Image (cartoon, rainbow over all chains, first blue to last red):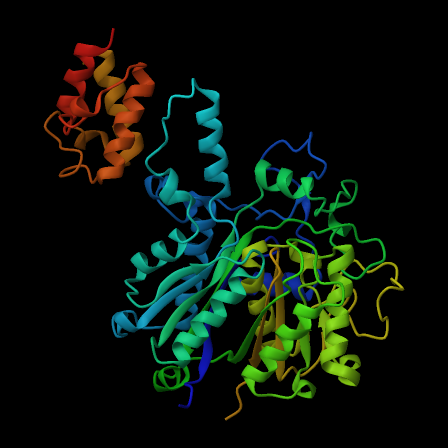
Length: 417
Length: 78
């Protein structure tokens, strides 16, 4: 059977460097860092005291107080970006077939803040079990997709993917495939995360996963720099409206790009460390290229996972060289996590939006904070250091890898008639 | 209005996001004030916390209006 084609017809983003897709793109293009000292709680006793928090997010600007109280922040972020993407797509919500519209969302953790607060309140009283009836429905990761479906009456496929930092890319791949196979015509897909909490920072600190550069938060996320010392936790969300090509064409929709393929693989190696030679990362890009039915030489830009950890950045570049050979040196490669921090399960969503905007603007967003070359890396690769580079991007690939050894890649292509 | 009644009303206004004028003694949490089953459970828990008492489930089932909540609490809060 021939597969249906899938295009992106709407985007929305809520990130530490911009509270909508356009502001986010301005931040990316200008190399803005979203990192600062944590404001959400007093970080004084934590080894890491900074993160990429959303700036000026106030739930009551978006929801009435009663509604806001029943949602964890990760769900609030999801609804905000879904709304922006729906408006951007100009879908006529009265005209579409709601039974053929789905929501496939990604979140690595779900309602971490809710979990933390409820358990704290239990532990702080006399151990009488007194849990809020909204505890479970606020916390569970899938509630985000549930809320979005209720808001727009999207009655098609509906679930949330959980694969740590690969979650949103898994969601986009699933949404693409269900549209390709004819199970739905429209999907709201993407991901959201809100893990900048005591439990989030403390937990990742215990793993020694986070940068501890407290004296200079804005230069802490420095993928591929010799002195990188871990990732910077970020929060936020992004949504993409994926639509079957003929459906989008028939209504005269603005088409940002075609989502032409996705790959998945596992390292099957270690719970948190990447495979040293990048085996899973190699396989996932190979799988994505095969699914998209294109040659490696057709790719112009790779938005890497590149979290700024000592091991991960090395194995990912090894994998790129394995797959792309000589063409690796002609690619533009960048890690936008240098600016946004690492949004965990939402990373794949904001980075998909980065790819789509980069293609639209023929501009590769930079990897900021490059100070010193690392001789463990191949410095002939164009890692788009410090400043955006102009380039006509026909094909962009985005990688995300998650703890657990989950790897995902997706490929966008500029639509040519 | 008793102090208890005043507190009950403000909890209901806060948790259900309703106007003070809607919170009449006859108003039913679910039929008039837009509460669902989870909201009702949360309200009972808030009453328990505010007045430092424990409301048994079989009693809680009989509290479905503002007036019922006020009279239950006026009778049982020491």
